[in-house]
Image 1 (cartoon, rainbow over the protein chains, first blue to last red):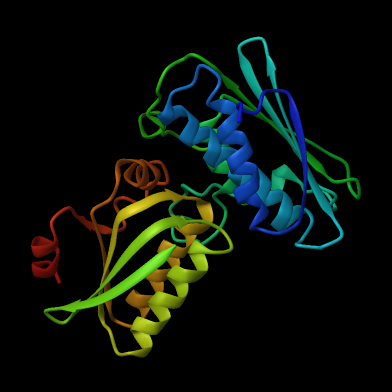
Image 2: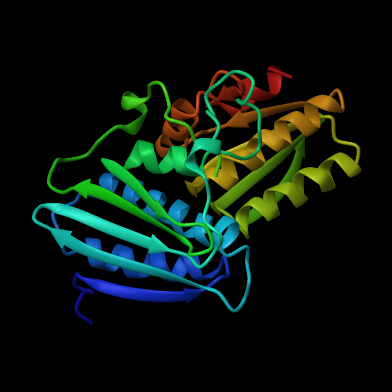
Length: 158
Length: 111
């Protein structure tokens, strides 16, 4: 079967097991593009976090709410958009997971993952109309060591 | 994710295999830790050698496991971090929180 090509659109129900479906489609699609296994792993992880956030914090696992995922190439850039149907959230309320007082918190690292593994992350939300997160990753930049880029965090509690 | 439990020299060793991710793997890890504690374990070694992916929920579960065991006056240590898992613990600055070993015998002596 030929690899899935970009762009594509996927709509899933708000269940964690559907994250595996997104991962399978994404992995298949990325295999056709100029991205090594190491980089694909980190993109997979960032998208996983975005979808998990949409399911858990956006749609609050409501079975009647959907998560929509769009992937496309814009020039040499992979663009992933994940939309939920939740109440929206305030990025200003996020906490810094690297702060000593937060280091042992069990949650609050999802957005931090996205920030570390992608080149750019943006949010678009309006109260009551869901959240759209856009993740961007430049292709063909070779394998990266995200641990080597660890520095001060933006904030992140989702 | 699959969890195999074995005992060596008074240490409960959890061999994890697969993904520690939200909804499945993180729950399996939580259950395994609680079962070990309920069985009286005070020394727990988590072997991550065959873990392919750990998401933020999985990291959170590792942190919860560490604090739960420590709060009960027990000890939890990590064994055989795959490079990608080590990267994650480095990025999250948790690498300094955990005692990490790459040799099981050495880890057992470390308790």
